[in-house]
Image (cartoon, rainbow, N blue to C red):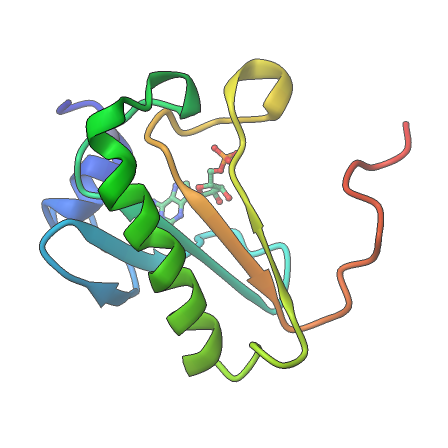
Length: 117
Ligand code: AMP
Ligand code: ZN
């Protein structure tokens, strides 16, 4: 997937502030943060979206939950709380077609999941 911006971050072809990396997962700062803490956690395998998740991806996606948990703890926001979001498709607001989990924290994020129109 050589036109995928997140694959390029994985391959170190474009820079990112990487905060965690192992053989199948990478986490980095979002370039346009919408909260004081905003990271993206992604599998190194190119999976385009939630719609493309296969049975064989369960293990890595499960491990991502643990990375998110540990990152939140490391950042000192586990107690106060945080939000994890995965957007899918046009209506879901997905811009980058490589599955990713937003980790948002550092302020009270409110109770509304969707902005009022
Ligand atoms: P989504 O709308 O769920 O597809 O989110 C894509 C996210 O990727 C947005 O929050 C962007 O700010 C972020 N993003 C796009 N390009 C980069 C990049 N090169 N480095 C870090 N974050 C990026
Ligand atoms: Zn990709």
